[in-house]
Image 1 (tube, rainbow, N blue to C red):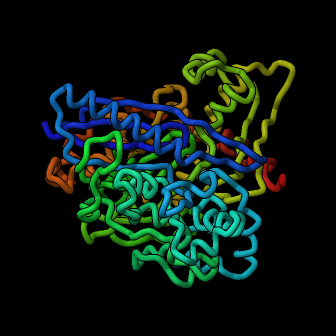
Image 2: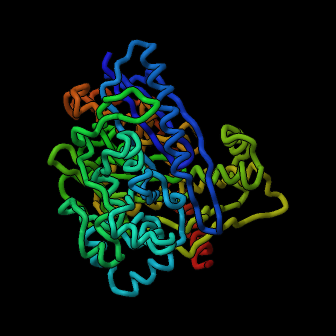
Length: 497
């Protein structure tokens, strides 16, 4: 039984899932790792802890799958994007903590890029807005602040990579330093039209080419060295699929045709629409990004990013202690008929699409003596849907397309109250597939295409099935009133720092 191992390296945990040709989960393993918050607005990971956790769960999943009669034919990697690692090529050790995509320490530097007049050039080449979210400014910060890092980088002693690149490097025992086009397209250093690193962008941020990885397709053999060679895993398994988590989810949802869209509900929310072989320039601050490249054919997407979604639920649990486990949220929120007038804008790391306001901060409004933790829980879930509705409106405006449905995935799709409210706000059906692990599944599909486990994208699309469909029930007048109240709350969160 030929199977694919998907390594799903997320913001809060590392997972490994083995899929067969029918998209069934044969084995899985998962392990959380620590989050570090050394200063307000800073978020860091220990890159070695990420690697060790990912290797551990990969070994567990492989062993379990082999016991079930599976043969691992290839590995697909999907990862938290923009998180930035800088390491010593000789020792393989990071020279500093990894700077996570949520980190805002480079916001002030981003303002200097805007003031210098680089906004249009960067937008035209990369499809991105200038924001601390992306990894290019994080890399510059490391080169500027880690002792001797810039000198060592220019001598070729240091390597930069997003998490996919870091995993490839370790899986191949340091033989391969490569990233795929989707992750490269999130750096502010990559020309999405020519699909290569751009010298002008590197000059803007004073980044030496010597630290950058080779760019490869999302599906296909990296090279002869692109096989497992690390301690703890079976040797010789080829790595044939790589994509950032949201791109992998778009592929795993079967959104292979222009005009199809999905939304992933994880630590953040990320809505992507396939726009086909041509990039679409947004008028509403959406991102234009590479969806994937298979062989020599590149597909593009529009993306809207919500920085804080599931992370807001984690804050209720870990920061406020209002719940003991995230699984309590659905029942707690459903125990009240509405939020009691409470509106919560979880702008802990600023606001993403369509506002792109690094100065915004988390805001809770409408509190009274009658407010309970149930009202706050419900307001938190509604905030996730409100933020996604903002992105959806921008996407519809940009493309002029009236989407017939929104395909959804991620942990929060298990919450029926949230999904129903999302369908009500959007006014179209929200659809959850039978296989919920669409991010990992997308990575598996990309890897499997390269080794013949799946013959074509048509073969993949045929296996996509609906598990649950939520139809909108709220009147459009009621939706308009709620959205107006939400926009009022958003305005009050802006310009705080």
